[in-house]
Image (tube, rainbow, N blue to C red; front, side):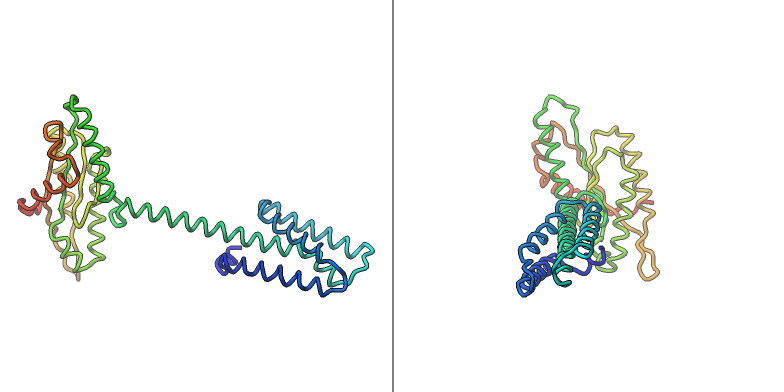
Length: 287
């Protein structure tokens, strides 16, 4: 059945069904015995059974129909030519098979469309290289959090911290060797997934920029995590034509709470602030 699905298209199967029905009904009108209405009913019954019955029951139904039809036509006294007998016996199996083929192809198409929709939805939310949430997801998450802080100004402990890690000169590396560029991006993302806190939200927002959202962290814990991440990032090497290149990074950090929430009310306000910080930072090659 899978081979049939790979060979046929849904439209071809429908056309084949229509041609088979037209030819068979035309043929019945040219025969000696009048079996037009019998063939019409059997054709309809075969199609209905294909769409109503599960595959296993349909198979047994067709087998029983063939056995019963053969026994009736061949063992009984039937004044009818052999061609007409054969048509009456095999009409239901023929149209059951065509109906099953169309049902199967329809299911394959529906599954393919569903998978395509899922893939599109996935790629709209997740970066395909890093497997991290993209900029749109980051913006939605941040603005929901900011809205929560704004609506609960009495809760002065509410804080969201944004850490931006920028891979310096990433665009030049991208143009030099795109395959190696993607490998490095994935390795950076994997390090962040492992060494950042489980409840942190890690996003890849644009070329070479990773954005990490955290709740309020104690200073000592933040420094420990940052130190460990920087050490791991320093181990990554960009390799091209047998030459290994050390990577360089810039870091920016901003905490938002009830005191400055109005200054960072949108995701754009936040990213503009982080970009200004990055522009004034000295490139860090952590040792």
